[in-house]
Length: 214
Image (cartoon, rainbow, N blue to C red; front, side, top):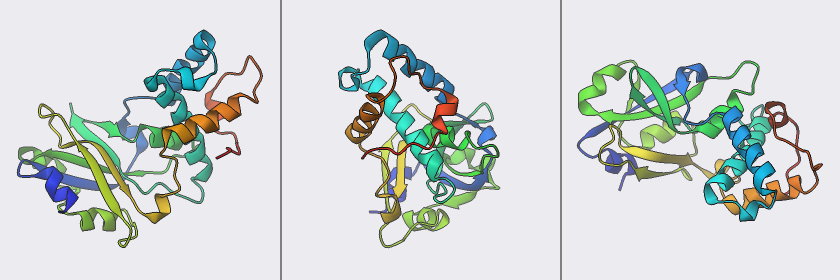
């Protein structure tokens, strides 16, 4: 069954915006806050990442992604849209904070594509967006390979005013991206093992050309 038709059902509509400024988006997490959390935890609990709680493992593995994405931006522009919801006339990020962190490291951040689901009664707020009713429409707009592209999602809780809380859109070209948490933890563990005892992460660190061991 078509995944988008399934996720929307009778209640929701989906809209796509091809180019939105990153400054228009309100993230759940920022790079500076993520770095602060990780640095604090390293001081308190050490660098054995596999002893950290899952949420903190997610936070430090995110830093691998941020640096990885930033380094690849010149030759691999981000295709996957940022998933948002609207509240108080603002667009809040549901899925895509890590990509935004990498984009915000650029001196002139490129625009990003954005996708939103909303109840049909609010569809009038998105008249200048592109309506999406099927997998093929979204895959075509984000310029993925139609032969290998796939869409996955997690339904949102029933009390939310949007249909999905997680959305993955990818094809063979994104298969080599860093998705596995254990792989990222191994990469970061190897990196930290080579750093001085007083090492701390920073915004400038995220821009460094690091050769991650995979």
